[in-house]
Amino acid sequence: MKSRDRLRIAMQKSGRLTEPAQDLLARCGLKFRQSRDKLFCFGEGEPVDLLLVRDDDIPGLIAEGVCDLGIVGRNVLREFQLTNGTGSELSELRPLGFGHCRLSIALPQEDAYSEPSQLHGQRIATSYPGLLGEWLRAHGVDARVVMLAGSVEIAPRLGTADAICDLVSSGATLVANQLREAAVVVESEAVLAGRAELPLDERGEIAELLLRRLDGVIQVRDSRLILMQAPRAALDAITRLLPGAPVPTLTQVDGAPDQVVLQALCAGSVSWRQLEDMKRAGARDMLVLPVEKMLA
Ligand code: PRP
Ligand code: ZN
Image 1 (cartoon, rainbow, N blue to C red):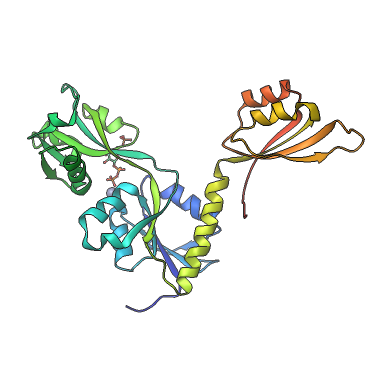
Image 2 (spheres, rainbow, N blue to C red):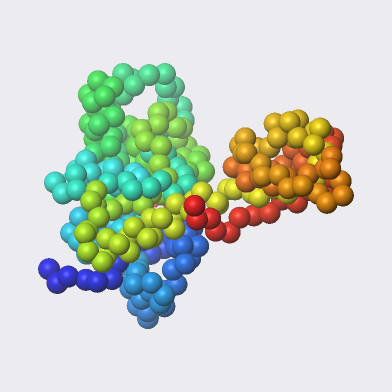
């Protein structure tokens, strides 16, 4: 294969993961010029290009070396790892914290469910035979897996299956099809997928740079910088109220030896209630700021 000196990232062309994935890459400082066919996007700043494809194709594109990295649901990646010979070369490099959903077994609403053994001898329709098969084996259930590429949720009504194993996000699809969630097979979210070992050339270096930026973005995404003035005597009480137990930085206030300016990076958002509690403890002039970038 012809070697490339630009990194190529695959992501879903249109679907639930598209917008948050694009947003994440933008936060990592990547800009793309969208091409006409919208399949290939040329990266303008860094030597990183984007390939917009069907999510199910992403692990295969990485395994074949067409792309170096991919943003894809953990469910799709794990299914590929279980059912493909080349799957063991791929790994989940980072969980990305969006696109949360679960792969679940669901039954018709009128069927009660209490334990896996109930599924013995049942026909279960799914697009995830690898993950379902693994779960069935782990629970000692002997069921028949009916492979369907799509529209899995209508299989019980059509009589082609007794149960399904499909993705559940809001749960609306299950409700609309009079199904109930019975057991969770895999908890999923968007992940960054890639080869277990990064290439040792220029592309590997770009990938490493991107991973470092990604870590920074993920770390600050939910962080808040809090600033306030407080009496020294109240510092312990206020520090205990800071979400995520950060170690605050203190600055002396000129002409007021008993006062300090406190600055702290909190993991997670800071609620009005938490601010009000800190105010009651003696803090004033409080500011909560979003964090844009962080580099340790
Ligand atoms: C999944 C799944 C369900 C639906 C569930 O498909 O197959 O149809 O989402 O979501 P809900 O609980 O919010 O109703 P999706 O559109 O994500 O794409 P896929 O065909 O690639 O699996
Ligand atoms: Zn899909």
